[in-house]
Length: 160
Image (cartoon, rainbow, N blue to C red):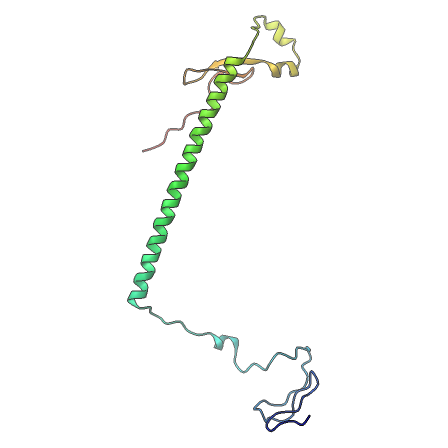
């Protein structure tokens, strides 16, 4: 195959054409072996382009509107999430109270009057003992034998 006018003949890989017929200077094979890398004519810092210093009034107005819509949507999502969490918490509390009431209704118990009986029990037996306690709401609940006599979950007072 004959090379056509103005075209260099096909060269083996890694071989650069001689002379500067295409505007590039003749270079040998790079030491690194990276043949695809060209010669840098500019510094990397010179390649940076400068943004326009001012955007148009319309563009800024559109950006503000978009930001406002985003903030409104975010506030809406946050409020719905808070409402869901409050509802879930109330549900949990109601379930816990209902469970305690049902547990207290279904229990069969034996009253221990003798103090000596409790003192002679093993730890495993003591774990089985429950005691009754009246909560702040006025409900009778079953608690462990060594639980505090007051309700350990204080109600939080929120500031207005």
